[in-house]
Every structure is written in structure tokens, then in C-alpha cells.
Image (cartoon, rainbow, N blue to C red):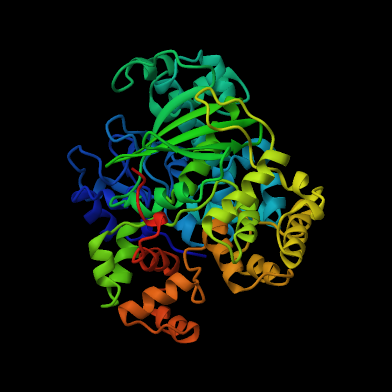
Amino acid sequence: MQTGMHTDTERCVRAVQSKDARFDGWFFTAVLTTRIYCRPSCPVVPPKPANMTFYPSAAACQQAGFRACKRCRPDTSPGSPEWNRRADLTARAMRLIADGVVDREGVPGLAARLGYSTRQVERQLLAELGAGPLALARAQRAQTARLLIETTPLPMADIAFAAGFSSIRTFNDTVREVYALSPSELRTRAPGNRPVPTAPGALSLRLPFRAPLNPDNLFGHLAATAVPGVEEWREGAYRRTLRLPYGHGIVALTPNPDHIACRLTLSDLRDLTVAISRCRRLLDLDADPTAIDDQLRADPLLAPLVDKAPGRRVPRTVDEAEFAVRAVLGQQVSTAAARTHAARLVTAHGDPVDDPEGGLTHLFPSTGALAAVDPETLAMPRTRRTTFTTLVAHLADGSVNLGVESDWAETRARLLDLPGFGPWTADVIAMRALGDPDAFLPTDLGIRRAAAELGLPSTPAALTARATAWRPWRAYAVQYLWATDDHPINFLPV
């Protein structure tokens, strides 16, 4: 079992006393005298150390009888980086809970996806996070409810349903218990302007992150590889369609100095929590850039790259199966050719959607639809057709699982067993779809070229040996190495 930062009392006290925002989401401070819990960067005068106690999650604070601070709003802090850098049971469970699995399938569904008994999952989460899966999902529902209350004019009954509560009474009781305010009082006290009417299912919100965040390669990569009809760059925002559990959505994401502006249009508001979770995952917003950059900066040949543009993130995906298919389509062809192949599949087999702003026309095809495609209609070499059809067949029948709960090492091994899958394809899927922060691409031509220019070893074996010192953040080293090229993926579109 991992030991969280909340157990290091001295370090936590220092972080609170210095109001260090880098630790927001890592732990929460509960004040024994006021019965309030805060994020480490709370602007109020820090309490005496003797009156502080520390918890690993907001859910644990709530379960212990503390209510959220009205000043620092701890429920809106970035998520813990722990769940993105680890692949153990707790991390996989937290990724599934963030994806709304407990609300849709219950704790038995969560346990089944993880391959453990319900009792084992509950015991592990309680031991490490101080709260079980139901309490963690409840805290997430409370956060979603607050977001809807403060940013939309929706009736409270609709908000209760959209946030995942089983009844209006449970919704009211939970909001009062967590925030010490009724839902109506929360709306009255909302910061800034009151909610104004928007298009049905549309809302705007801010996605927080730990600074620094360099948007260049993040949005540059997404824009340069955008599949027409599914993605686009428009007026400073990356827009794309989303396939969600209860329906579909369209999101526009705009980088700002202190947050990502997120505008969501959903066909069913019950998908709000999972849509937010997937957008955060897409942009790698829960990463800890200070820890990552400090380790990479220790290599004197990487240090100038980090110092020049710190805070690079790994551009990820909102749909793991989609990315895997696109990785195969992009094997040994240019970015433009890969987009063309993907666009043909989208037009022929994607589900049409209505975009009020125009520009987006389809959802990327489901694995079921792709499994039914006639291979002879695919304009690609026969060997790649075999790779494509084998992959989508395995994705469709579940024998290859790329979901947030997947085990990174096991999934990579299964991919390598498929025809046409070499280390590069498996590792790029591990990096961008599975979210493995240590995935590495030593055979990538751009990486080898950058290594040679910097004086790093340029053969795969020697570069892999040198990169041992960069672990567990080799996927971020890839972003810094790629950034030495003048390819469009490295630049924020104008």
C-alpha cells in the first residue's frame, strides 16, 4: 500500500503555512476548531499546527464531519497527481470513480472492472484514502452539483438528477452537509455574475491546473492532428465531439494563463462529470509539473529545454479506443495522410451529430461499427488492413481493454501480441491513451534526431539506458525532445 503525503505532518504544515498552491489536491487540511477543511493554498490565516489534521481526499474530510471552506473552495482544486502516475488498484479505482462508474454501475460494477471483490476494493480505498468508493463518488456528486448550481440557471430538481443523486432530498441534505449552505444559498453566493440562460445542455466552466502549463505542444498536437468532422481549431479553442455514456457532447477548450476555459454542450446532463473528467485527462491537467520538471532538469542536456518552456503536458485522449485506431492509421504515413484516412472512416461510419456552431459533424466511429467495416474498402496496404481489423475486433469483443482501469504493462504486452504492432505503436498508445507517464519512444525518428542534436545517445538501446534517470516521467521527456523540431504539433495555432 502506498503512503500518501497527508501522513507527513511536518511537510503538510509547511505547505499550509506558505500557502503553496502546488500541493492543492495532494492533501486537504481539516481544522479541528472550526470543523472546516481547506486546500493548502487557502488565503485565510493558517490555523495553529496543533489544530490541523490532514486527509488524502475531500471525501475523507466530509466523512469525518468537516465541511468545505467557503473561501478556498477545496472541492475545485486540481485532482491528485497520484492517480495519473500510478497503475495500482487504488489509482485505477480512482480513475474509474472520476469517470462516473460508481454512479452508473455501483460498487459491484467498479469491483468487476478492476477484477477484485467488492470487499477488497472498499478495504483498499478506505485504508489509503480514508473513504470508500461510495463516499468518494458522493463527494464527486457534491462537486458536480455545486458547479451546476453556480454556473447554470437549471432548476434544482434537474441539477440533482444531472449530478447523479437518487432523490432531491439526498441532494439537499448532501449539499447542506458538505457546504453548510442550502442549494439556493449556494446559488445566491455564487462568485461573479449569476447564471444566465444558455442553449439547452450548454454550460461554461473553468478547469484548474497546477502551474506552470505550457499550452504550445498540448494544443498544437491536438490541432495539428485533428480529424475533420470530429475535431477542429476555431477562434483560439480546440473543439471536438465526445461519445459519452448517456449521449454525446461537444466541447470547446481554450487555454488561459490560470485555467482552461471549457464550454460543454451535452445531449444529457448526466454526462457532465464524465465529460469533465475526460477533458482533464485529455489535457493532462492533474499533472505535477514541478516534480516532473525538477527531475528532468537534473539531466544537464535536458535542462535547457525545460528551462526554456517549463510545464509541458502530454496530450492525451478522450477515447482510448479511438486513439489506438488512429495510431494504426498513422503508422508509417504523414500526419496529413493519417488525418485523411481517419476522416474517411468518420464520414462513412461515424454517428452524425448536430453542432450549433457548425464545423463538427460526427462522433468518431465506435469499435462495433469499425469491426463491421469491409477490409477491402480500406485504402491502405494489406498488412496494415490486417493490423486494423485485428485491433478493432479485439477492442469490440473486449479481449483488449484500453479503459482507464487497464493495467499498463499487461495491456502493452497484449498489444505487442497483435500483428503489425511494434514497440512504437504500443508505446504511443501507452503514453497517450493509457496515460502511462513513463512510456518512452526510443525508436521514434523525431526523438532520435533530437537526441543526436543535443548530444544524447541516438541509438534506441543507448538512449533507453540514458533515460533511466528520467523515470517515471519519460513521457514528458518525449514532449521536450519533440519540441526541438519545427513541426506544427509543437506550436499553438494562430
